[in-house]
Length: 214
Image (cartoon, rainbow, N blue to C red; front, side, top):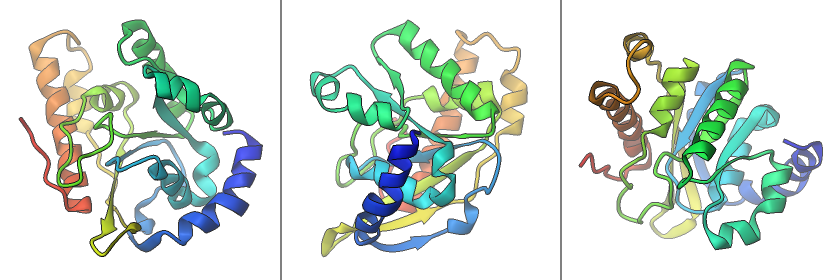
């Protein structure tokens, strides 16, 4: 993340974000060092600024995964992606997805943070979307834990957010069992889907939105 953006966030953006937060639970669950994956539900673009606010001094270690396969994204986000050192992916391009995954893993293994929204798109108001399994791939290949985050608006004022941060989730057994597994096999996919749904189950509890497993 560029130093200019960190300064803008600390002194300009964070005070605005703070005014839109009703309450935060679980700040003590954020690791003070080492790599991990932040996984959150995705209400709207405000989530990016909220996550950086939660990370505090560790925001400098964070990288977002950002899609670049829609016209509106291509037109509106290049400067933001540059300032935040976002790892860009074209979701309909297999080579782009592989490159994104490798960059994310390299970043994590240096002791840094990856922020990802497993649903891929903004959630419907009443429920979560069924998540993509890319986050499980990232867990298996990096060996890093996942920090689940749930965000919801107050019923009487949706612009005021309630934020809950869960405890880091570790997947040692799944990582060990998939280490030498054929990544194109049905068995490997079953592990990916299981890990993804477990993460989303935690997020569902934190944001108080049901998660469809089918």
